[in-house]
Length: 160
Image (cartoon, rainbow, N blue to C red; front, side, top):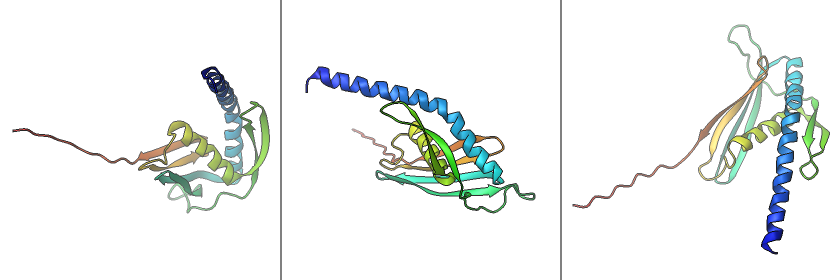
């Protein structure tokens, strides 16, 4: 393969990625609204989704939903309601928007996984990272708390 073919292939990929990113940004408000509407209709006040990864492997640890509580702000955690929602997604190669039916818990995990990859690509590599996403239904906000692990080495050399 010549350098010209390689450059054209990379340019084509970058064009697809750029188109994908633009369309994804356009459908994101719809998808967030669908998730928050489903959570609100189930009486859910907050959802916490934990993640942990290291050594080139990472996963989401669990999703817990909370109903509003009178005394302590949030009542004991429960599972995300088992309901389906219709989300929009982008086909990478064409940039077309498709609709798909997804269970609410899977839809939440898919969305926050995209956010995690966008903000901290490679979060599961090396020493990795851990944290959680908090979906606040009244605020319709999604917050990421991210903790990155690293090994620190201090080197000193002295000549006397």
